[in-house]
Image (cartoon, rainbow, N blue to C red):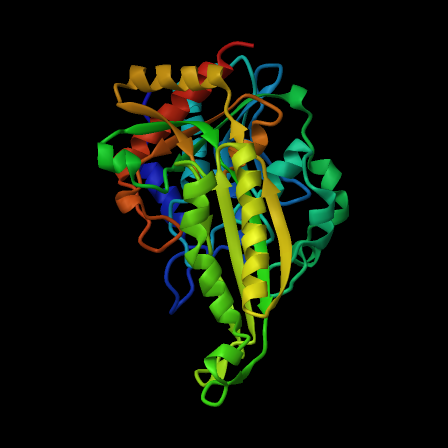
Length: 410
């Protein structure tokens, strides 16, 4: 059996009509926005047209079940929310390919021994910290984060959910006991350059990086840029720049080749050309596949932030927004995926994953696997994000055969 690429492309085109805004680039389907929820409802309808039993759980996860066979279900899917001005493939491909895989199996006369479910997780991209949908399904939501999480505008997670008719008080109802799930498989674009550079068809993730996500504020004194001598300034931006300059040294000293530390969002106040910045607010995202390394890097970042603040006469606040532990993926499932790729006749590479994915939540309760297809130029989280449709078809066929293999026997 082979998936219907034209049908997959049609679904991708349709889902990506949700989140297009005139005058803005890319896809803007941020979690719990109207566009996000409309896309979820469309996806539910599309799954229902395929004969699947659909529902949306208490945190916004969409579940579509092929209710055949008996025993724990095989789950496949990804997420539908996007970053602001994001690409067309991140997350959406994994959901639409899972639907196409199940349709292909139904039409091909496959008779699974186990139920099969498609899942489109909520809030993966981090508007409020990330991974809410998969963490809720697995029962691993941090209650302190859940009660305090806010987006960049100050909107509380609970208020965003209520606006969409969801009840944050019913979080516990999203939980799926581990005994109800046999395995989870996710298809995703690589979001990096390795597969394209080395001309590899399919990547299979072996481990997922842990992530610490902080918001830091350097507070100094806003003052006139022409009358304040350089040595008497308490310049918040100068502190930010000094800390950022030292990040490569931190990684060189205590990191690994999998360590990443990124300052991706910066806001200055008063944000005026002739005024020394009195406040610099910035994000820090740190990653590594080893938990000890992530914690050591986080500790050193905290130490250097403090030292930089002292040197520049600044005060500092650090808000630890979220923490995701590194996760090794199930070796047995990695071997199954390798075998499927070989059967399909595609080239394959096992590789670590530096980006966070719902699979790392799912791996806490069930064997879980992550399939990668190449990203053109390694670009993601941007309007230029692209994966060739030929590569999408290869990934979807691997996903389909993996689901078939996992669901064939109890």
